[in-house]
Image (cartoon, rainbow, N blue to C red; front, side, top):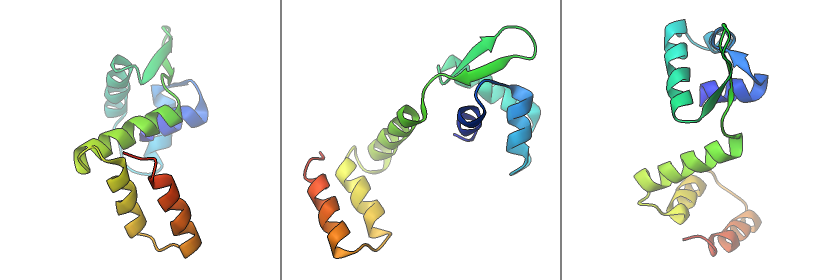
Length: 112
């Protein structure tokens, strides 16, 4: 997701530019970023847009599609496929007003 966030923010970018951005937050090897981006291309998460060196990649999916996919995976793995259980767990971690709670409960009626 870190690599995807960089690509979504910058647009098409070479591996080195993605690496430099990621390095600002934590140490990461250029070869690791290059390998990850190649794997992500193979999974259609990234697209190679320039065959000339340096290779430039763009996002193969938009941010909403990536979030949807990730949430489905989390719901499936941790909450036995239940979106309602996932939402209820999240809500239990952050107190809300009665009005907000009622709004969420109304939305939850349509889940699962």
